[in-house]
Image (cartoon, rainbow, N blue to C red; front, side, top):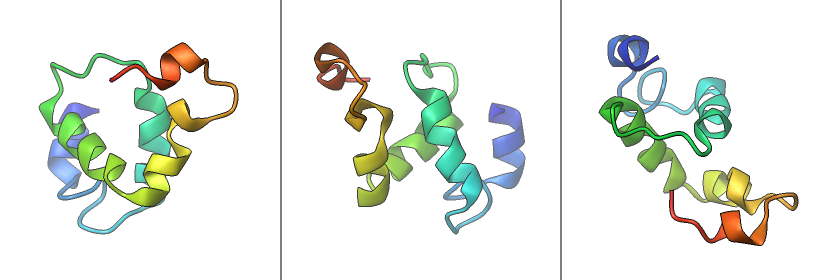
Length: 73
């Protein structure tokens, strides 16, 4: 995925505009160690700075444990 994003992504997963690919990316990254994937990490950080993404992040869901809600990724 890192390599594919390096080829197609810019600011977001597909160029410089938000797309469904960005919406699908964040839940897939939940609890994944991304230290080996700097490009994915940069997109994730950019997306997590957007209010709509912050409020729908997996750690904001009602079935997320209190312990998980307060963990820093």
